[in-house]
Amino acid sequence: MQTTITARRLLTDDGAIEYPRISIADGRIAAVEAGSANASTETLTAAFFDIHIHGACSHDFMAASASDVRGVGKFLASRGVAHYLPTTVTASIDHTLKALDKLANVIEADHEGHDAAIPVGIHLEGPFVSHAKRGVHPEASIREPSVELFDRFQAAARGNIRLMTMAPELPHALELIEHVKTTGVRVTMGHSKATYEETLAAIAAGAKSSTHLFNAMRALDHREPGIVGAVLDREDVYAEAICDGVHVHPAIIRLWLKIKGEERGILVTDGMSATGMPDGRYSLGDFEVEVRDGICLFGDTLAGSVLTMDQAVANVQRFTGTSLGTAVRLASRNPARMMGMSELTAVASGSLANFNVFDEAGDRVGSVLRGRRI
Image (cartoon, rainbow, N blue to C red; front, side):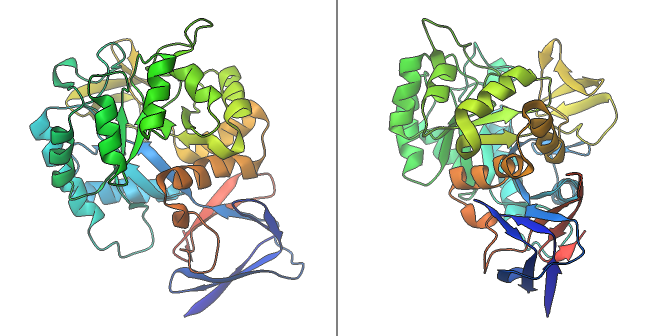
């Protein structure tokens, strides 16, 4: 069955199409063409891709059942996300292996239906992080980078680990980066006290991005630029940012966007199980986090967020004055390109018919998943 969607404007990876006419067959785009003027005031964009999220709706991916994960997927779809990487947190090796196996089961399942975002891989955050910049990652479960241990994790995940956060200054880190690079896994640098030179060495070995830039890493200094300085200075490196106004001040978000630009900035949520829920106590891996006034804390330390991607897209526009097109690309095209998954957010013939719908004021008012409006 073929259907047609029209709008006032379609924002693509690199431009816009006025009065688009999009033909959809079997949940995929059959054709995109500029049509005739119509009465619509809506703007269509690519759906979002969240590469760093630990859970939502009281469900934590370290313990979630298949039905729990589907519940998170339905919630994410309601916030404009079509694809995501369920993200782990440092835990015991046994706990991590079990969580990876369960997540792999969900990723490999048949994703029938059109109302849920689809997990397309796993983001392994921990245990290869710095003790000094661990944030809330449990100190007892942190491990030195190890090819053997990573391979155990990847075996449990049946090859579904697609992104790994690690601290590049740790012993054997470069060896592990070079190893995972050969398997197609992307490396993002974070929870790190790396110097400028240590960061450059990791980039040379194959690291592609930074995990929640500015948070849980050596601070920028005029004599030792560190990991922040290296990432900002390198035009070929992507940089995540949590744009909630809590993790990073709006002025620093403006600086981040000015430097990394529309091509290399990536919006993430770092959302945890409290996302979409009222204040209270919620799980993150092996420990509990308290949410007060929408801020996630373990003691006095930030522990993830309750940010949703539609809020992040709205916030980056409000904080920086950037356009809707740029904001959406930070949440769709850029993470997909960094991951080597550009087909997930491309608006082209053969791609999945996943869109977000914005009204004339620029507010998101709905989504289209696999050709059906939700």
